[in-house]
Image (cartoon, rainbow, N blue to C red; front, side, top):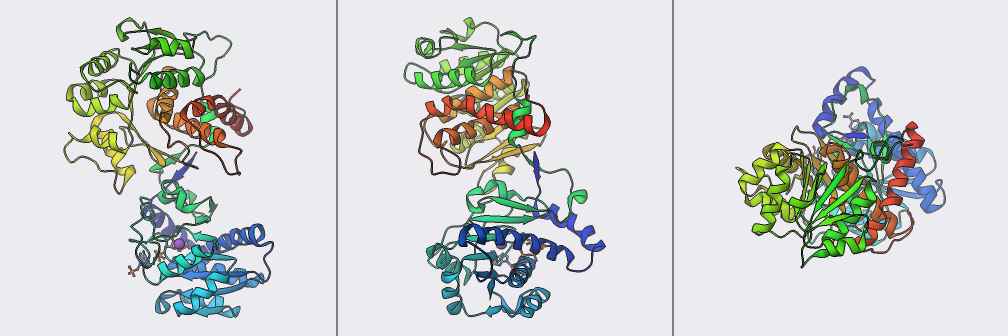
Length: 507
Ligand SMILES: NC(=O)C1=CN([C@@H]2O[C@H](COP(=O)(O)OP(=O)(O)OC[C@H]3O[C@@H](n4cnc5c(N)ncnc54)[C@H](OP(=O)(O)O)[C@@H]3O)[C@@H](O)[C@H]2O)[C@@H](O)CC1
Ligand SMILES: [K+]
């Protein structure tokens, strides 16, 4: 597990460290770390360091200072460095002096900069960091566009410029070029910021350089689970367990029109934990045929006792669906509400009141989220700040909210937030949400609190898709939701193996 801090919190943590270290030491530490990453990238992508060409795009503030110092360290190692000063009058003086002392080339005319980036082996984006507001400013779009068109990789210094460091959002591109950098990799300093988990597609892999802020940082407003955390929390049977002690999950999903949702959710629940799965609904025959271990009935009233309900996929949003949701919310056990159940919660105030009385996890995509909060005073809007919107919705509704998207955001009513940054987009396929419902419902039944269940389910769901798409590190292929479902056991094995390696847990 690691934390993510806002730029303001990082700034506050920096102050005492800056006060007790020699002037410029923190920046030099950061820049040295950035130069190490740049040299590794040059070795991997250009076969070596000495004599390779690096262009540093240098903005007006300390981020530009990091870039200039990194350029100086690279020059010292024999790299041919060109610094492009985008605001020549405001370039960091000490960094500029350091770079000049190594006789690096310094360019201020964009017309000279374009051929330089086109011929570079690597471009460092030191245009703007944590003080960024809005997209790239001229002439940066032209230079970043030329870099991308030439296929030259970009290493973002601290944050990919043009991407909002707090929310990960990017303005529209203009005729001048891209509004933000798309980095091959990012190197960050002191603490990870929201952009690194909310806009992984813009950052690429993120390296972390410790500059000693740790003791000064407050509780992180966002945490990110790692494989070992998920593996250590994953419920598996012990010697004293039977099918009931591990938790029975009820699945209320699917309909005559959408039996597939029931099959996907029930099967995912079967694969996620080893207790027992009950199914209630009009797709009982289809569920039994696909998953003979499921105890299936036609109505929730006949389902028998469960320790949690997963309700919603393919349920319908009419009176029957509302009655089913009302029934499961009345059972007094944790509830996973997805898809049509989310829409029903948005439409019925009494159901929302019921949901707040039991541990409820709601898993909307963007459209369902808008319906879920439509009736609230001042409805939270995920554009531009998805974390804030999820946090406000969770607090207002008294439920845990898992907001789907490229980065999954989980917010608890008490203000805790988890983000799961997607490493890929393979989950953008019909039925993948039904699979997530089954996994999360099974974890609720096994006793995980909604916040943890949501984080662990999102992690394993994404891992199942990645494994199903192909061998990590090679180009993958699209996969349907039934293959995501089939990948759940492998995904669980990998997180449990990670837990075993890290802590000895997960046995
Ligand atoms: N404190 C430390 O010792 C350490 C700090 N560190 C480093 O400092 C970085 C933060 O530095 P910073 O606060 O100086 O601001 P920074 O992000 O460089 O922006 C500078 C100016 O750019 C402008 N600007 C705004 N938006 C823009 C845009 N879209 N496109 C173009 N320009 C834009 C805006 O000025 P404006 O023109 O709007 O007045 C803004 O004031 C941090 O990310 C890390 O890299 C590390 O070295 C660790 C030690
Ligand atoms: K940057």
